[in-house]
Every structure is written in structure tokens, then in C-alpha cells.
Image 1 (cartoon, rainbow, N blue to C red):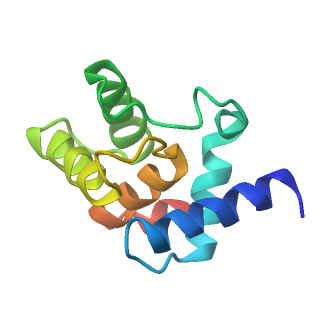
Image 2 (cartoon, one colour; image 1 turned 45 degrees about the vertical axis):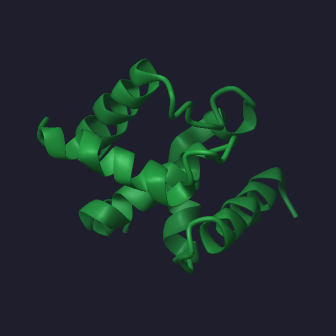
Length: 113
């Protein structure tokens, strides 16, 4: 099993056990690949949910640039909702899992088709 496959399996486990959802493995794989080398760096592999700057980066670089969404309060509300589902007390919120849940939240699966 490659390092990427190991990470995808870990992210799927988080989605099942911490988020209570059965992941679409094809979509999760594509979202993970879309994260690029960030998933291999311990600092960038996770989202610092308590950092407003980090959440702003997720909004601008992922929701607006990658998913093509217009800036609105709904974007931060969605990020907050995803963090709530993941669990605010959960120390490691993996970027690929957060991005996957945001893709599902906004129904933007087609971007990864």
C-alpha cells in the first residue's frame, strides 16, 4: 500500500468514526490527490480550526478558488458546520477530510469528476 493509499484509508476511517458518514471513496481519493504534497507534511496535513487565519485560507484557497464559490457569510458558516461535525475537540482535523465534507456540503462533486 502506498503512502497516499494509507492516508486515504486513514481519512476514510475518520469520516466513518468521527463524522458518522460513509465516504465516497472515489471522491475522497480525488480530493486527497487535489491536496497535493500538503498531506505529507504534518503541519499542512491538518486544519487548525481554532485559527481564524487558517479558516480564511480554507475559504479563499479552497472554497473560492478551487470550488469557484462566491464570497459570502455562508462559506464560513459551512466551514464552521464541518468543524462541528468533525468535532471541535478533535485534535487532528485532516485537510482532506475537511475538504471532502465541504465538497459534499456544497454539492460540488462534479469538480472532481
